[in-house]
Image 1 (cartoon, rainbow, N blue to C red):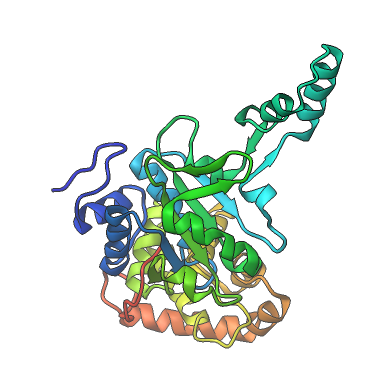
Image 2 (cartoon, rainbow, N blue to C red):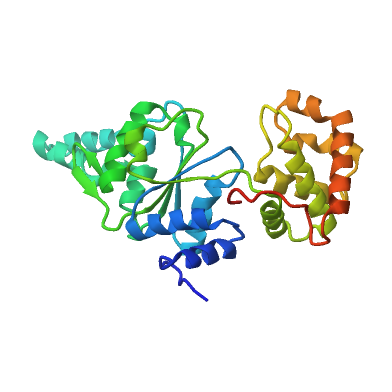
Length: 323
């Protein structure tokens, strides 16, 4: 059996699978291979897929499993260098100028040199990932890059190519040891080819029934096998319905926990209708499923589980990693 010491990079694909499994993350070998190559060759890992399939969780479990600090940059429209990389502490600089004037200091070049030193530099996530205060390369999670503007994406090219950032007043700051970089995208827009070329890539899809059952069982171990099978079978059925937003694995986990919080150990039409807001996030989807569709789906689930082997949910294609 392969083992990985805290802070040590896993030395094989099997070691990556074990590391993820130890953090209750169920992955297939394709994803584990992409992670292994990303870690071994110090290349960023770009993960794409629908919301809720476990992309963000990859960065989190790697940080926990490797015993490293997680630095997360949540992307959004309008994200700029000042928020993501660095900015100068203007308030402290003004105080320093006033103190210099009060002390009679008149050498402008010396004052400017002091003002634009690292003493007055505010480090944002990207700069902190390149030059961490503790000297230990962290896991950098750049989450939902597709939500950021294209100019910011272009700025990342220097970082992802050479793990360096240029600060005009200080020069080029380089990483002594590259951080582990995980980038996620929900594909609300396409990521530019120039950035894709700098990354290893993996698509995370909705898992098949057996894999999803394993995932939810790991994340909600207190749930009964009967409830787990019903939840997974119901969610798998919902993913065949034409909905605005299909439920992800995260919703399956949340729904199981919600049902337990309500004291439920099996599904019934009334409970499903009352808790659909945990699974579905748009009113049109809730309205489409609630009532007759709920009853029909539960009937299908009942027939499927009755016909399935006693080990669990009926056969379904295993297409992707889990969370």
